[in-house]
Image 1 (cartoon, rainbow, N blue to C red):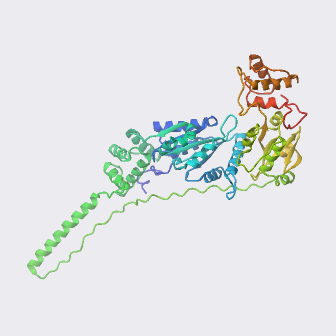
Image 2 (tube, rainbow, N blue to C red):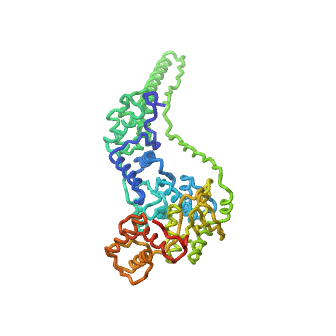
Image 3 (cartoon, rainbow, N blue to C red):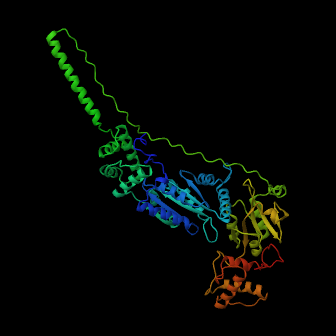
Amino acid sequence: MYIAHFGLNSAPFSITPDPHFLYLSSCHREALAHLLYGVNEGPSLGFVLLTGEVGTGKTTICRSLIEKLPDTVDVALILNPRLTAIELLAALFDELRISYDPLHYTLKDFTDALTTYLLTAHYVGRRTILIIDEAQNLSAEVLEQVRLLTNLETSNQKLLQIILVAQPELKKVLNQDNMRQLSQRITARHHLTPLSAKETIDYINHRLTISGASSRIFTDSAMRLIYRYSAGIPRMINIICDRALLGAYVNNKKLINAKIVHQAAQEVRGEKPINHQRRLLVTIGLILLFCIALLWWWHTSDTKSTTVTVEPVTTPKPNLPSNNPPILTPPPKPVVEPVIDPSPPNLLQQLQTTTTETAFETLFRLWNLKYNKSNGETACQQAATQKLACIIRPGTWDKLRRFNRPAVIELVTDKGKQYHVVVTHLEDETATLAISGKRFKFSLSEINKYWLGQFLLLWQPPMLPVRPLKLGDNNKYVIWIRKQLENIESGKSKEFSTHFNYMLKERIIAFQRLYGLNPDGVVGEQTMLILQAFSDQGPRLNTNFTPSP
C-alpha cells in the first residue's frame, strides 16, 4: 500500500527471511563466517550450532549461507522439527529427493539407504548438508538420531554436515548429562545477539536503501524510539517500521517522526492508541451539541412554540490497518520428471530377484561366517564381533583388484532403484556376480552402466579396532607387518622382532611408494589393506592374481 507513496520499489520491512535484505552487523557477520567455516571444514568437523533469541535473524543467516554455497553442495533444510525419528529421516529424504517406502521403511532401512546415497554423492564429488531450524523443539530421541547421523563417514571425513539453528533453550538441553555425547560433537558455536542502538539505525537505513529509498523517511528520534521499543530485535524492528510506514501513508505523511512510531508500537503491542484527531472531532461535536441545546432552550423559552430537532453528531472512524499478519503460502516444490529406463534386460532381469540381505549373507558365507539379518546389527557390526573389519567407500575396479577381496557393490538403475550384489571373481574385462545364490559373469562395461563405484568388503586386520602402527611401536602387531612384507618379498617365514624400528619404516615407505600410497612410513588402514591382499587367509577375487603397483 505505501510503496508508491514513499517512492520505493519493494516493501523494506517484510518479516520473511529474505537474504537480499540481510544486514551484517558485527555479530551477524561473525555468525555467517562460523557457518561458512563449518561448511568448508565440514568433512572433518561435527555439528555446527547457531543460537539466538526469537527474531534475531537466524533463519535469514541460513538462507544467505545457502545462497553462497557452490552448486556441488546439496542442502536439506528442515523448518519444522517437531517430528519423530522416522519422520525426521523421511523429511530429510524428501528434501534430498531420495525414494523410500513410507509404509514399511524402518530406521535401519532409512539409515542404510542414506548411507548409500551419501557414499554415492561423495564419490561423484558432491557434499550434503542438513540444516535443522528451530532445533530447540527436537525431542531427546530425535536429537540422539541426529547425533547418530554423524557416524555416517568414510575413514577420513564425515559424509553429512549438520547445522543446528535454535533458540537459547537448546543450550540448556545440551548441558544435560544425557546429551553430553551430542554436545561434545559440536565443533563450532555462535550466539546471535540483538542489535545495538547504532546498528538499529544502520539496519533501518540499510533496508530502506535496498528498497530504493532516495530521501529520508525516518527521523533520528523516530529510529532511536524504534530501538527502545524493539530492544534491537530485527523482527520487531521490521514489524514496528512496517506499521509506522503504513500509519504515515494513511495520514499522508512523508516523514516518520517519534509520534508516528509511538502509535505504531502501541498497535503492534495490542494497546489502543490515543487518536488525537478523533479526540478533537469528538470535542468539537460536543461543543456544537451544547450550543444547539442552549439555542433551543433560549428559543423555546421565548416563543414556547418552536421545536428544535438536534441531530446527533458522529465522527468518522479512521480506516485503521488490520492487526492480522498476511498468510504466507510456501512455493510448491518442483516436480521431478520420471526417468525412462533404457537399460539392457539381461542384467536387470537377474537383479529383480536379489535383496540386500541376500548379498550380505553371500559375502559372509564366503568367509565361513553367518549373517543374521534380524538381530538389529549392521553388517559391519556383525563382522566386528567375528574379528573382521568392514570398509565402505567409493572406488574403481583397479582398487578392488588391489584389495583382492569379495565385495558387495551397489547397482543403481536410471529410475533410482538400488540393488546389491557380490563380486566373487574379477578378471581383466569381466566380473562374476553372486545374485540370489547363483553366479553370473558380466562384462565390466555392462556393470559400469549401473555401478557408481561404491563397495563394501570384509578383511582381516591384525587388530580391532584398526589403529595405525608407526615408528617406536613395540607389540605383536608389528610382527604381522613383518610377516606380510616377508611373504611379499621372499615368501620365507622366520621369527620376527616386535619393534617398529627405522629399518622397518624404510621398508614400509618403499612398499607405499611402489603401490601408490602416501609414503609416510605409517601402517594405516590403506597400507594394511594392500599388505593383507597378498595373504592366503580368507576368500580372494583371484587366487592367481598379485596386486600390481
